Amino acid sequence: MTTFKLHTLASAPVGSLPTLEVANKEMGFIPNLYAHLASSPVTLEAYKQLGALLEKSAFNPVEQQTLLLAISFENRCAYCVAAHSFIARNMVKADAAIIAALRGGQVLPDAKLNALANFVRAVVQERGWVADSNELKEFFAAGYTQQHALEVILGVAMKTISNYTNHLTETPLDAAFADEKWALPDDYACCKR
Image (cartoon, rainbow, N blue to C red; front, side, top):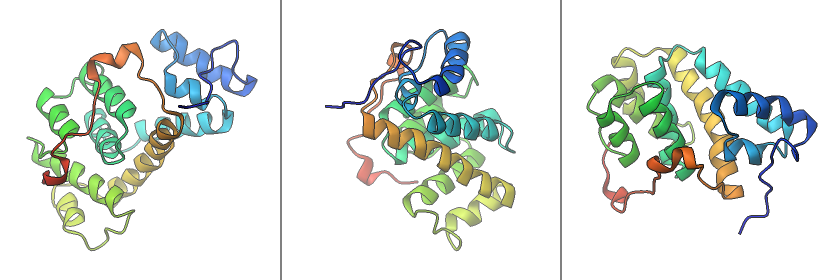
């Protein structure tokens, strides 16, 4: 059982208040991930800044969510898979078949996005040791560039903060994301990219 505090605007350290206030205003609630991260204002700020930088990346919004869902799947983060499924479905309007494939660790129905997901999965699984991998070759063959490859690392850094925080703090799923609740598929060991 976790002992990490889910902060509110009343209990959060002063340094976390601006981020929590913006989230509350924009989303109508403070996501539980933010409520946990609020215990460390600099970690919350780092997470938000990395997310803002990813939004400026060469990846379009659907590619960004593909990247973030693939990382969260590989890190087995139920909270982030649910949250990014919600964002992908409701905010960026990603195809439902793409979301389902990402949530299941399966082949995506879009070849370019599949190359992205495979490269992301390889980066996470191999801790970045993918310089000579087929996944990197296929990523470049699909039209992605060196800039994209480095921006995958940016996404991994961002999701490492949130995925590991959720594991450490046992972040409860927000009601807003309940319809996207996720668990690792039973047959994951046999899943093929």
